[in-house]
Length: 335
Ligand code: ACO
Image 1 (tube, rainbow, N blue to C red):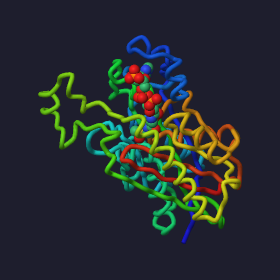
Image 2: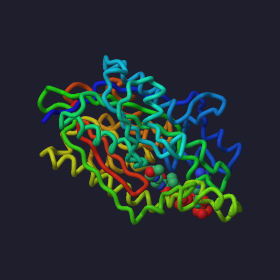
Image 3: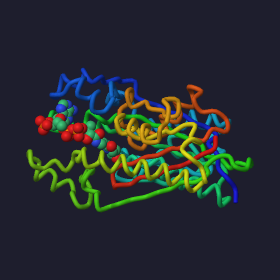
């Protein structure tokens, strides 16, 4: 069996910065409420006048990651693309990346696991590398939330949280023993699907039906979130995912050099940090700048932490996420 290692990282966020105060111009909210409950100060929302979309942002992040891995687009064997906000209902974003980057006709797989999307995508890529089928896989998480949020006061509990952006990693075959991805752990609990959901358009909530019911009672075309329910599940599932990753590798919480939690809410990350007795140096957060970018959040945070020199050779890194589905999971790596 081979092992797999991240050899390139990149991210891209839209230029357009939307501060909490900016939001108060079109909904009833406040900088104080948002910062106190979520830690978010600002987020990036695509300016519709630019060419930024879920796919083009993913392609921009991917280009950086490929270059930093010292590879060219022709060295990539496979694409795994995670998003909950694809440009089109079908086909998925993976084939758009293959086209935008003018890559050979390699396979492209789409992952639909929301905030856990990048964890799932990385785990899938890891399996292809471990079996020897592929050598270099491009793994992307990208989201355009701003195009589908209810930006009125009615939708404020959801819309203030989410931001746009993309991140990418190159996962490559690795000859060094004990390096790279040590294990990945994936979970789901579909009975809670409707606690964090965007129902339509989809085959159970098709466009004519939405148009017909297009009054104040039909909000199925906007995301719905039962915030407190999600919060409670998030804190316990995050913890479980971290413990599971440590136990599977006979490691202790003291061994963690860097925890990159999905950036859902700074309060969740702080709760986890306290629970595991981790120092500020051992946990990386950037939700303050970007909000929750769902499938892009872990990979943008990982890239920034690495760019800032906070992840060094041989460090033990845990990536953990929880989100809609419910889905959750972790990936543990020796850098
Ligand atoms: N500005 C001002 N007031 C607001 C806002 C806002 N943006 N949003 C809600 N409020 C009000 C509510 O109307 C309510 O007022 P009321 O008491 O008069 O009725 C009050 O604030 C409290 O509302 P709650 O929804 O109970 O607020 P809560 O403390 O739960 O915080 C939050 C909301 C931040 C969303 C929190 O529940 C949370 O972070 N949940 C978890 C989110 C998460 O982890 N998501 C998973 C990933 S996302 C994915 O997978 C796609």
